[in-house]
Length: 185
Length: 319
Image (tube, rainbow over all chains, first blue to last red; front, side):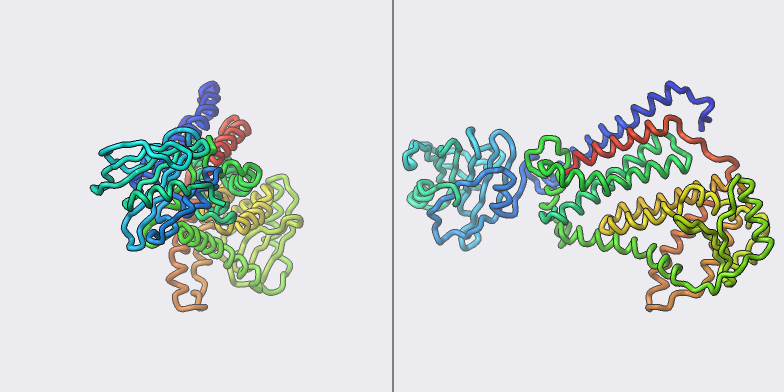
């Protein structure tokens, strides 16, 4: 060990400053890496978060969610999975099962202008697209292949936010849900 | 993490304590801080982070807990989605709290038993003890503190008192130690009194009580206590070998007490803690076998300020 008498004061001064700086920077880098662990374990993209309930998602996004007022009795409420993404725009996706437990509906929406981030939507190749009226708004109806099942999807804008409903049910049910969507009371 | 205010605060407190402790240990290594005084101050500083910085950040800056807080490098609430087998975040927090309470109890129970122990009536100390104390105090340029001599066969030699400082020496300790060891042990206790260590130890008890749920704070507080012992060893200004011998003898006398019989597994549970205490004593003796005191690090005040800033900055980004 170097004795204090032989220590170079300038080197010691430099060490005094650089060591806390290095610890802070390295610590911050390690903490940021650790922050990615929950997403890594869950096998989801970084930044995607899960909420236990709608209230938690609304608190995290600082916004009330738009939900369909019409909700078929064949579906199970509350959503079995709520995932959200904070960014520009922030967005949330609710996965709703049928009463028999099979996946049935996905409702995704942003809290501001911009498209629903792709991270929230499972990959689904589009088979066909056609315009459709969703109340006063013009929407786009698509047939997509979601997890090997041909599924209907409707996208539209409401109050400056983008909404998307993807359902394995009938077209009539999908459009009734879309047209009944409004901010939760 | 659990969403309740207190659960969330407890989780942050534990995480901040862990991060501050690791940062302090990293700085101890990088700065080659070998003196017990330097180590004690850096660890004490780490201990103050969960006590002062965490509640201040939590209650004064609630926006840190929001999802869109841009300086959040690690958001503990995101770990709520992780499950380790059947353990949810709330169960993990409860388990950590139970561990912390156990660590606190391990130290507080013997303390309470020791305070309640009846040593018999205090008596006037024998002349050789009074002479040794006067000699050691004079060598340090101090007035001899009040002496409480207890005519008990149990070996006890310690200092106490925050305002009225006193040395407690039992007859058992006098019989156990030879004159050189006695002077070394008295020098060690006077060094404790000079450094106001009884006040420090009460402050640590209070702090541990306040952070009863935080296992990292409990471990850090024990490390600070060990550093205070080491500091008193270095400042004892006595024959280091005699002090090592006295430490060893007093420790062995403490070990040879009758085993606990309060409940069936008491001995088995107490064994690891007894081993840990023996390990601490072995480390102290090894240090005392080294010839000289380690050097104090230069620019200490500035370094402590920088260390505090580093720990607070790391706590700030863990939300």
